[in-house]
Amino acid sequence: MLRQQEHVLGWRVAPPDPDDIGARMPQTSILVIEDESLIRMSIADELRDVGFVVLEAVNAEEALRLLSKERLIRAIFTDIELHGELDGLNLARMVKERWPLIEIIITSGNRNVAANEMPERSLFFPKPYAPSAIIDALKRITG
Image (cartoon, rainbow, N blue to C red; front, side, top):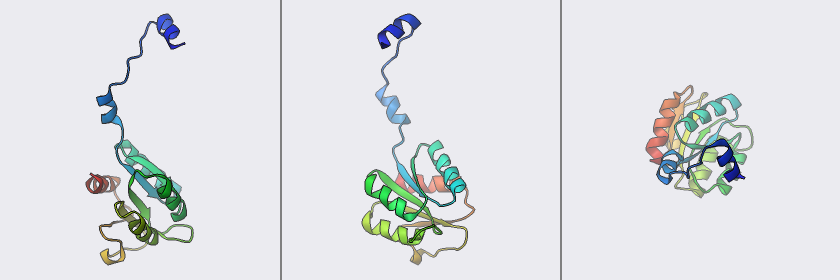
């Protein structure tokens, strides 16, 4: 069928250039955990725009399910205040225990978090945050 379309329409489909595909294909998967849908969608779109593969979860339980299935997640970006049994800090601790190589960024608009309250190597950004600051941090910790 494709050959007929090529002949009739007068165009030819070139095979993809493997080098070009590698340059365009995102290499790093990020899991965004945020129960406020507009905030979650906004930061997820910003991350996708710069080439990250982004998965989204509305609470810690959904995040844990995704982490169990998706082996390519390199970092999580989680709000502290989440609906459900676990908050973002407890989620971060569980992630660091189960998947120690996953990097963690935590955010909150209601409280500041000291380094000793977070898992080792975690970062904290208060809300409102600049998306560019989150992007830069994710590039640095996953690069």
